[in-house]
Image (tube, rainbow, N blue to C red; front, side, top):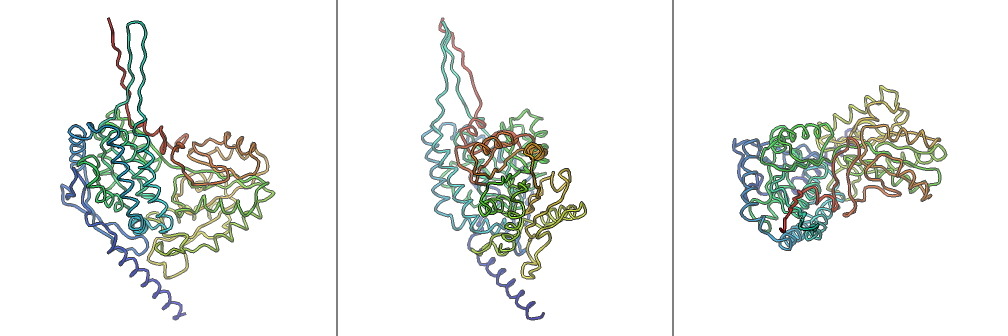
Amino acid sequence: MSSHSDSSADRRDAVRQRHREAAAEVVPEHTGLYVGGEFVDAAAGETFDTLDPTTGEVLASVARGREADVDRAVEAAWSAFDGTWSGYAAGRRQGVLTSIADVIGEHTDELARLESLDNGKPVSEATIDVRGAAEQFRYFAGLVRENPGETMSEGSRYGQVIEEPYGVVGQVIPWNFPLMMASWKLAPALAAGNCTVLKPAEQTPLSALRLAELIDDVVPDGVVNVVPGYGEEAGAAVTGHPDVRKVAFTGSTAVGKQVMKSAAENVTDVTLELGGKSPVVVFPDVDVGKAVSLVSSAIFYNTGECCEAGSRLFVHEDVADEVLEGLVAAVEEMTVGDPLAEETDLGPKVSREQVDRTLSYLETAREAGGEFLVGGDRPEDESLADGCYVEPALVEGLDHDSAPVQEEIFGPVLTVFRWEEYDEMIELANDVDYGLAAGVITDDITRANTTARDIEAGYVWINSYHDLIPGLPFGGYKQSGIGRELSADTLEHYRQTKTINLSLR
């Protein structure tokens, strides 16, 4: 027993040392507010610590923005818009976005390791995120010139319909994909000609601040401003600011409702990308191995901390035993550990708060009579004791009306339902408040198309999951949000329409 304990302690010490060395290399030098092209202290001089969820150690002390700091950032953004950015022609903005993409690409390894340290995601997944962030700026750089407007003439009347930027937009992003979510917000806002105030999540502010460092010589001063801080302080100040003309928020549905109320005070336009409880439907004609791989990825990618995670499995009775046996085996083979290690499949959750939240839902599932096919607790490995780890879990036998099925857990928890009658399955698949995404796994293309149309969701994958392609709009139905990301539709969310009616008499 003591030998095992010593071995665990040695591994734990090795992880701590690895993370300290990585932090010394990649944690940004500047952790203040980025306002008007400069890093500055918060007006009140306050800071907060951002923690490494793998070791529990402090990565950096970050400026704690509040209302006064948001005021400064909004003022700087308007000064940049009026004095510089509004005069940039489309081609010049296109060059700026392309340069941002280049800078991100040149620092892929560094940014991926920083994301792993601050968020806990495996570095292999963080690398995908960083590349995706660069891709967003390239995609919207390609759309910058697509603003032809419209003209109409009737008799002596000549009409023009033109699209103009809002001016200054406020953007609040979550902690699950910090850099990628920053790119989802910044790229279309800048492409449309806006300046922005970005509020990163308090759990993961470092990659946004490092991005600000990297683009400081690329973007004119004040065009991009970053105000770290807590949601109820800095975030609320952004979404309720009278001089912010447009608000874009990604996060939970509960907070999204608060954002709508806050924006309503000034009748500010909003787009919201919110929570999900996405179904994955498996038909009896599937290749079991392929189905297992897709379902596993749908729920366990990014430790289940995905708004579109496929968290409810509807598997046909004819293949249910085989698929579930395969999923149990897949979970048992997963490596839960240090996110900086290439072999790691699941890293820690982002914080102790999120661990407690997930464990609370798992306890509710037990009390409700759920059968745990695998997982459902914290890992027994003592070398992981410092980190925010939760075992991946499969739970069967819950009532579909129960809280673990209906509510977004945002963790590696898959609830399982067997089905035989299609109509009954579809009714359950749609029986949640959310409608963000879904997955359909079948070799029958007609059946796949019918099911995709019957499911109430804004984005449906057929025989794949999580692959988000720029150009295909992403967004939800019902309480999963308002508006679309990743496409030309997004650009329209950052523009306002002006009609000019000219009399030629």
